[in-house]
Image (cartoon, helix red, strand yellow):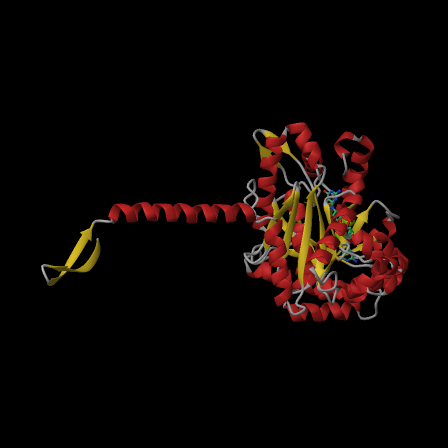
Length: 469
Ligand code: C2E
Ligand code: MG
Ligand code: MG
């Protein structure tokens, strides 16, 4: 109600006249108008700050948030990821734009699931996304996130009955080392993304300045490798070994990965350098320690008889304190020596046969088991099989690949299994990728198998072990 009171003089007397009006209808109309206006304003502001297709914040929001962040950052590192879908035009041309649109939405969803609440994912334009990744414990964490995004996006997308396989390239610029303002950070991240694309895509690449490129050329990977341990850039992946008689996972092999500023690097590309420079000693210690700790954790979770296999290189193996260091690692991690297996290659065993047999004896006395890795690629000497006290022989994957179709390979593998069994050595087949290979190995009493068919090498996710058992 609205009340208006006026004073009037009527017949020489002062009177007060109040006019009472019902204004509820008017108020209703006013409110409606205001809320429509508010809604409109909200809509306009949403449209100005979001991408309609993916509903992600847009470039304008990114720039503003980045500016705010730079004001508050006080040199605390954070990262800018520039992501681009490889050959997206091909998807649009082949499947049509509406499938391309859905793909963009799905890619955005997958990426978002890998980020923290505080990180900001934006659609930058077309098939480009930019992420503002908040500070993590160290820069290796940024690389791990990037690697997870690359992996996750390479998995199959199912859209309206089509199976799509794509890949993404990511460029990373880390504040403050790789840019101190919005333009620099975005430019450097996109330059790194193009460099990842040039190398074939499906990878991440950290921005490397011109000076760094020259440095990189001069010193190769060494400059980075030198700092990798300290920067926590290594991670162990674990690949299961299946026992054929019981159908149980009885072992895992620890395989090192390096999340370097230049992308994910496999051991084949940096172990030789680590060996040449002597860095293999601290790296090897880290591997042993991490793998033993992990095995202890798995055993405590109920996987009692799990055996952990570790690869060692010649430099490590022939170090005077190799056995004693292993012994103290076992003590420190409280791991039973029977739960540890050391993998050496044929060439290591042959390098200095006498020392090798002594070291193997010492390891066996402790209770550690020994495996010969990659058997069949080197000397394949029967002499050392007879004279060394071995527990396992790992048949190289080159002999396993398509063995069911090749009579000669079948005979060689049958022969190796027979010889090994006659000497009391168990056989592990490496690189088993097909059911037919596994069937053949089972029919011929191979003891254990390892390969993509059983499980890929995988990292341990926090608190969850990576194999279903
Ligand atoms: P390896 O010990 O013979 O390890 C098996 C290799 O075969 C691994 O490669 C593994 O990812 C790959 N692999 C496993 N299953 C399959 C399959 O079904 N198909 C195919 N195509 N490949 C398969 P990765 O991880 O790249 O390791 C390569 C080599 O690097 C290893 O060969 C090992 O000699 C060495 N290495 C790995 N980790 C370490 C480490 O911590 N220390 C040392 N010194 N060497 C290591
Ligand atoms: Mg191995
Ligand atoms: Mg091998």
